[in-house]
Image (cartoon, rainbow, N blue to C red):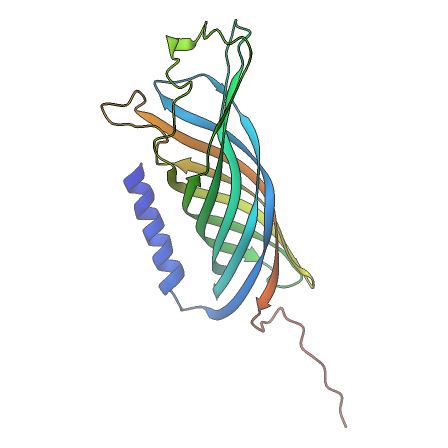
Length: 241
């Protein structure tokens, strides 16, 4: 899975960066982004969980490089604060437990769009690598906390420090962008597949897998810094003398 994802990303990056057979663009826009995430962790051995909800917000930048036939090609980068973690589903017990892990995340994605460049809507697809750094973590558990009735009798995660604060993986998503005279509004959904583990996955560690899986829903606002004149751009009219 990891090797296949790496091949796909390499191919998409090569197309975006090197293909210049379409109409050249030099559009650059910056702005803000925010929304919510639903996160679970893939553990081996497994831990039964519910979705953990958290906020995400940050800054974004986009560079559009060309329009190839009807496809508008560009690159998107963000720096986000995102709250991840996991929430355990503990049946037949009064215990409750969830752990919040705030991250600084940096997704670097290619973006493909189909539709209007100016004053209209277009459909967008984004995909690329994402990197993150865990700032800290907080455990939230009920009192008293008995640690009874756990599936597979797994309790090693309680109080366990994060071994790997650096996180990395693949993110991809779909969205709708509306462009107007005041900027670009993008409503999008993404999925993040974590390739790194937060706990030690060596023979000395207990968990062989401990990676994030995140669904996010975000609204992004971008305003143009540099904009190429295109067929969609209204041209000034000149009167006859």
